[in-house]
Length: 444
Image 1 (cartoon, rainbow, N blue to C red):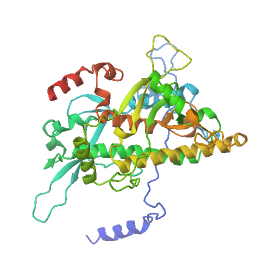
Image 2: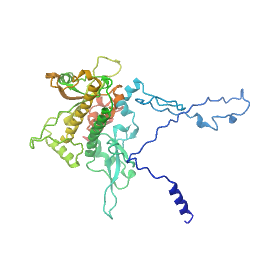
Image 3: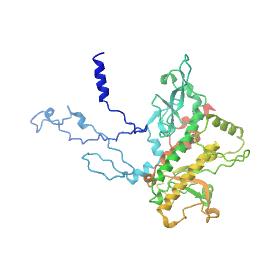
Image 4: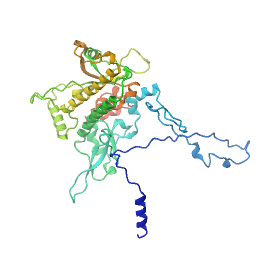
């Protein structure tokens, strides 16, 4: 011990002090490519050789690592700075137009997420089709055995709530499968004294709706800092009344790059208090339970479905071998049953719409107020409706990434069971999807 202490003190003195200017944020290291130039494979025959292959400078026997192939750096959506010759063999490159079109598809991005196994159905699915659950220690008094419970983890955006670095499990993004979690999930393998809370499905549904509002907030900030150089890069616009009537009459969305159509009217005032609810994204668990209880008691009122898939029509017919593309139409009343959250959704959409209007006015100063749907000059069917069209294409990716918002809406649709309603609808994105129908028949 007398010899160890002086060495420890010397090590502590030489160690630099941690920086206090990080404000709690971790700066990630720059991604470095490990791609190397593969040398030419030598011949293993004795023809033309004066010495053994083991005496070569780079031979595949003693230096086999030089012949390992590695992937290059993934392309970037947009390169802000021009490439500089740094002497490296692998440089980041900008995506092509075709790659940007793929990157703007929420369905390709969801299918490209890492595979995980659902502990309830034992199906391997991309993690965007699953819900991550992690154990959390419950507060206990002294002398009481420690208890843990499963909570949704990683559902909210990591900027607002980082994911826990603990052992976790995955379940399918379907609220009808949650009652079977306690009997199907191997709880003891995850942690000792682990239980499934009774309000797990309520918490997951709340966090999925909160993720939609968080993605809207982040998308608004990104668009506020991105100029609108191309009219085709408009992310959100409000349909006029005539356009909305066409959608209702034809049951189709006449926009090729539409990824979602949200019908969100402003929230009316409470008939009892004569006051409109204040927009609030954060709710107490008791308020959520009370909202679900009120909805079940007033189930006699015919509510619209949470979403309906409509074909996307366009002048370009495309390939006759491929099926027609479809986009979901979301109803705000069923999408956000809680009035404060629905008011927050309408406020966030209006704020995003105002950012788009300012971007158009800066890009097209000569057009004046022609881009305003609700200007005083507009009358009749030219006025704006309550339908908000969300677009994503190769042009919008240069301004901001719309795909996370579309994925958050689709995950909420899957959670409510809309994506598992019929075999024809489910077969669009999952192979051998008949197991869901048989599973639903067993449950009901």
